[in-house]
Image (cartoon, rainbow, N blue to C red; front, side, top):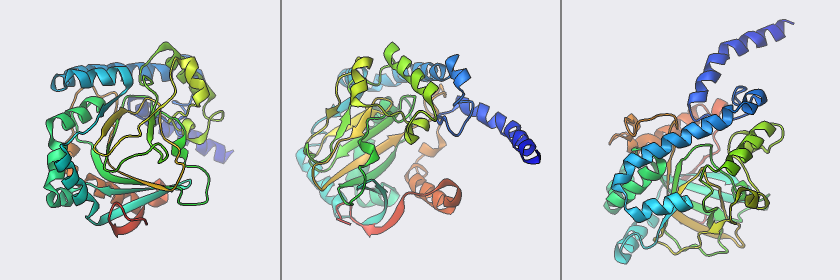
Length: 346
C-alpha cells in the first residue's frame, strides 16, 4: 500500500510536467500518459495537436517564402521535398568533395541492424579548414531552403554522414521501414557527395505524404488509439511506421527512390513518410546531412540563441559531450570511432 501511495503521489507531482509537454514537440505515447491517453485521443487530443502544429508551420512558411524561388515552393507544396540537381558548378563541387573526403576528424558511429551510420560534425574547425563548405551553407538558396522546409529561421545541425550497409550478419536496418519522424513538419536534408545507385540503399520518400489530408488524420487517430501496446516500439514513441500496403488507403503513391548523382541536394519535410532504401550489396553513401527540429507550437520564426555565430558551430560537440556524461540516464548509441576520414571503410 505504501508503494502504491508513493506511486500515486509521484504521478501527481509529475502531472504538471506531462501537461506542459503537450505544448512542445513531445510525441511518445509511452513516456507521457496524457499524450498516450486513449480517452483523450478519442476526444481528439492527438489530432488537435497535429492540426495546430501544421497550421502554425504553414503560417511561418508563408513569411519565410519571400526568400524562396517559386519553383522550390511549388515542389515542397506538391511533393513534400525539394530536389536540386547540380547544386554547385562541377569544378566547385569536385574541389569541395575532395577537401571533405580527405580531411580526418573525430567521428561517431551508430549500428542499426546490419548498417553503420557515421557522423562527423561540421564545426568551426572544419569550416575554417574548408572555406568552400562555409560558403555553401551560407549560400542564399541553400540557407533559404533549409529554413523554409523547417519553417523556422534557425541554423540546422550539420554533419558529414556516411552510411555503410551490409556490414554485419544481423537483422535488417530499422531505417528501411517507411516512417514519419514526428507529428509536425520538420526538416532533414541530404547533399550527396557520392553517386547513389538504385542498389545502394537510396533515400526514399512518399510524394505528397506531408499533406494533412482527412485520410492521414484518420490514420493518425487510429494509430494513436492503438498506442502503445498495439504498435511497434518506434511508432509507440511517436515516429509512426507505415507499410507500403497501407499507402493506397491514404491516397498515396509508392515511395520514390532518390537514386541520384553526386552534387544533388534533397531537402525533405520529414513528417512525410520516408525511409532508407534497401541495399542489394555492401555499399557506402556519403553526404552532407542537415537536421532542424524545433518546438512546433512556437509562432515566431527566429529568436534562437543556439543559432548565433560562435554557438551554432559548437552545438554538436556540446550535445555529444552531454550525452556521454549522462549516458546512464539518457543512453548514448553514438560511440566514438576515432579520427578518421568520411570514406574510411571502418
